[in-house]
Every structure is written in structure tokens, then in C-alpha cells.
Image (cartoon, rainbow, N blue to C red):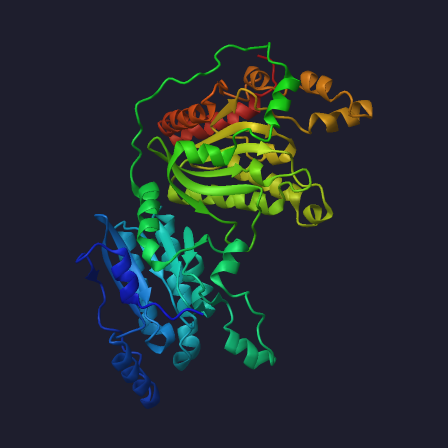
Length: 492
């Protein structure tokens, strides 16, 4: 297990030189008894600080940022009334001054010398953080070794982005307490930063020396205003090219070398910040979540990742919960949302059924249609079933020339209608699955022609639609979104 990293180390690594300004007032008096007073005096002498948390502001490449950092050498970074009051005051000041906030806990949790009164302080801190986020202000968390107890279960787990230092012990119940209570050791390797990253509880593992770079990239996406680039002309299919056969499009969309969402981000996005899982212990390797900018337009992007899918590994309920995390992030931060459809279909398994696959699809649709932020959906490749429908109802819908949308794979539709799969191509042609059919029916707005650089062209098309939809007043945008799907399929 790594040694503890001091608050000063974090502060120096992240902030511009000589930019730090302390916000700390003298700690409030908690009227300690003689034994606790002695503990406090020893902690001050040992740590060189007056409480277990330091607060203030500084700049990151010239941008003002508020900082709250625990100091583990002061009574194991534990949080009592005085520390909680200092944290809460700093969060409220950051909110009042509209500053992004970086919180860096390292703590054994509640200060036992203060008991229940200290324990309930976590509610006060969590409430202040929630209000900060409700003002559309970024809240970023860097967990250090160790972070346990009520700190991890409150303000340590509320970040828009949450990363941790390598090897850090992170968990709800500290291993020493677990062993004392249950008479056995807690399983090895569970309460580590790396394991929580794999499980989708946190977004990444980052050394303190790389934290500044990550913070700068995140703030560029989250705080810099949109700076739309010059609108470029791209090959957009303005005519309904009925010469493109539906089955040909489906076969092309299934090619293993076809670009997917990873290529879209690699070639078209800047300042990408990958996120991981739902933040609640769910992770699904068939999707990805990221914050990025497309030609100066910031967004939250959620996409179905063709490189993580196989016929036996398709998207499950966790993928849809991750999609809803992206929706909530976009709404909370006031960022547009981009949704990329490219799926073989949702998982058909006992586990998926018992984990609530169908209700998760329904929740995605209902959340998306009422989302307050601008939305753009991209039919990049295969659009099979409810997994595709869950990401479709956006303000604007773009399709690649060979992208398609269908209730089932054509082979499945053929099995229902013809009781075999031999008529799959005929079913694809009959069902109106092509991009040109979707545009004709009012489901798709723009089709991007698939030339040699079509994935780059798709990035330009996304940026253009983001610029366009962001300019629409929210009430008009929401009404138009509902009207679009209210009238699909109706006589014109």
C-alpha cells in the first residue's frame, strides 16, 4: 500500500506556482475534554496544520479553482465538526463565486472523539456539494490513500469525475474495523483504486504528478465556453439514394474494420476525458462514456462500442445505467449530450432479464425525451432493437450512409415472419431500415456520405448540429423533440 500523500503535495502538484490563497478561518471550538484536547495539540504539532482539512483557491493554467484537501497526518484525516464546517464553508464559497471545485479526501472517516455529532456532519457536507452541482458547477474528486468510512460514503463519492491515486485503499468499512467486528480479514484486492476502477465505481487511476494535466483537460471541456470552428462543408447525402440496397448497408455495417465510436473520438474529438461505468459498481465493456469537444463544441458523449461487442457479448442493463449517468451528467453540467448508436442488440440472457434490461431501456427513453440539455443522436452503424431505440430520441439525429435501425436483426425478423433466416435480406428491404428510409420517415435529419474520410466528416457533422441545436431556446427545443416522435409515421 502506498504511503499517504500530503495536502501540500496535492496543492503544489495541481496549482500554478504562487497562486494559492487559503480560505481557512480558525477552527470552530468543539469544547474538547482534556483527553481530546491533548489529541488535538499533538496532531497540530505532528502535522503542522490546525485541522484535518485545508481549503482555498488557486489557478490551473490561469483558471481559478477551489480546493479542499484532507491532511491525513492530522488524526488520520478524520472529520469532526470543525473540519466539516471548514469544508462546507469552502464549498459554499466556491458556489457563490462560481468556481469549479477539486476535493481530495484522505481520511479514516468520522472522528471518533466527537462521536455521533461528527458522524452527522457528512450530511451537511453532502448537501453543500449537491447545491454546488445544482448550480451547474463542476465537482471533481481525487481520492487518496486511504479514503474510507463516511467520507467515502458522502462527499468522496459525489464527483462528476472521480479518480484515485494508484494503490489507494478505498472502501466503506476499513479493513481493521472489519477484522475487529467479524474476526476475519477482509478479502485482499477489493478495496483498491484499481479494482474499483474495473468495477465502474471510479473513473480512473491517476498519479498525483498527472493530476494537473487531467484537471486542465476536464476544466477545458466543462468550463470553457463553446468556440465553434468555421463551418466546413462535408459530403452530406442530400438526395434519397434509393440505389443503395438495404442488405448491402447491413453487410457493410458489420465489417470488422468499420470505424466505430473509438475512431470517432480519436480522430474528431479534442480534450477527451474518458469516464468509467456508472459510478455505482456497474461496468459494461460494450459501451463507453466520455467528455469531449468536437471542433470547439463541448459535450458529454455516450456510445456503443463495436470493438467491445461480439455475438455472445452484447450490451446489458449496466450499459443502459451508464447511459443514464451520461444523461444526468450532461443535464447537471449544462452540456449537450451526444449518443452514438452502433449495437448488435441488447443482451438476451437470464442475467439481463433478472437485472431489469427492459425497464432500463424504458428509463433511458423516458429520461432522454425530457432531458433539458441539447441532444444529438448518431446512427453510426448497426442499430438493432431496444438497445438502439434507447439512444434515439434526440433533438437532432445524424446517420452514416450505411447506418440502419430495426426492431430486430434482419435474421430475427425473418425467423418471425418466414420461420427461417433465409429471407433476412428481403426483410431488411421491406422494413425501411436504411438511413435514406429513416430520413424519408422523419427519424433522421442528416446523412453523412461514407467516403474515405467519412468518420472525420461525421465529427464535423456532430459539431455543426451541436452549434445549431444549442442556439434553439430550451422551450422550443423540447417541444420540437416531442413533436418529432409524436408525428413519426403519421400521414403528411
